[in-house]
Length: 135
Image 1 (cartoon, one colour):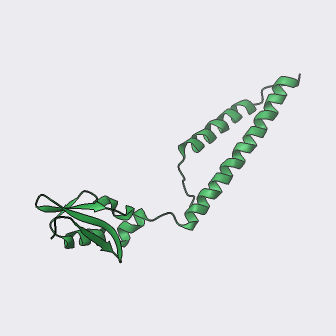
Image 2 (cartoon, rainbow, N blue to C red):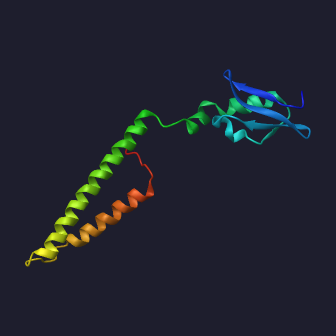
Image 3 (cartoon, rainbow, N blue to C red):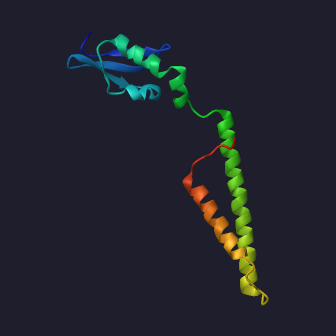
């Protein structure tokens, strides 16, 4: 093997290179899909190819694949749901402020506590930035 390195293809696409490092070959990933192999050492180029094939196996590839359209649509639905909840909460808070500030017959009917609880729940869900698909 030459001392300059060797390109490692997968499915006809260069995904990394190997360069001599001591008595082994050091893998340098050039594509994100094989980033897990970056910096690892192998005895031969065939070992790198085996590691890439193992990494790209169906059980491993599903972990790295981009979200499918259904997941994207689910995230979009969640965005609109959270937006609608936020808008509803804002309207109810404005109405509650109006009642408190401008009406003489205001009385506590539990609405304040309910609005505080709803606001806290919505804040937690929005700030978590985690999508939880509904099944």
